Length: 353
Image (cartoon, rainbow, N blue to C red; front, side, top):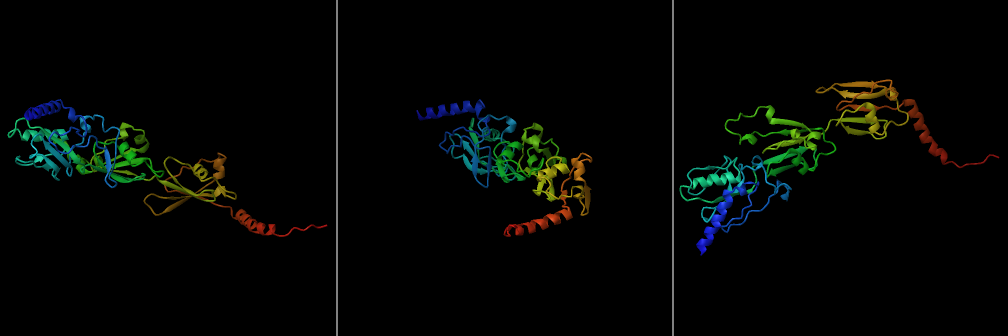
């Protein structure tokens, strides 16, 4: 009777595997029948190793296309379960740096890198055919260590992340809690050379241009497929700060303005709250430093003429300093009155009959 139960269980498992149902998900959720501890039903799509807090992704339970499945890499830890043969099952098998693993009775190493769980299980089963008839083997990824990406720069949460499925650039930006107010309009990806280790033998190696990609941030945030690529192991995403301009002098709110879009002189001064009294508008100064040079150039602009549309507004460049001057004579008189008036107001008032 016990033999019949095990035979029936083996038949059901063989039917399930042959139907290919277990290979439609990034993480296999088949329950083992050999008494070993079960694998988690669903694993998060991405994990921050520094916090060790996992977040469920809404897509983790949706069948993924074959090219989106996670492929095993060096450093990953596997559980390999042999149905009805616990002596051949192995837990916590770490994939070596060369991408290989070892199994009992098998001569030589077995390549695990670049294979999915199902593909590796099939490969191991084929190696045992000379010892056993129709061996049933399952492979589960226990720990993910081979696919790390990082995001740095003008993002809210700079971090390294471990991928448990293929993730797009916008997904990673969301996990990093989005760009900061200082972010520019460009997002860059520096590709690691090891990310191409799973290329087919006939593929050519990467050139210099393939090692770096740059996209417009607004296109990425809109989910434009051309600016939202899949990330690969070792990728470093950088979001540089925007170029800045500086408005100082006789304005209400001296400030630094991120140059996310073209800004003119009059607009920059308006963003600083406008000019105060006694401003010498015909002598507004722009201090401009030449790129790659220590020399500086001063440009005198007539703001009053621009406001009256008698002159063309000046487009500001990165690192420009706008200095709004004060009229010397008017400033002196206003300062004098400001210091004298309070003392006068404190004198007693008398009536002259």
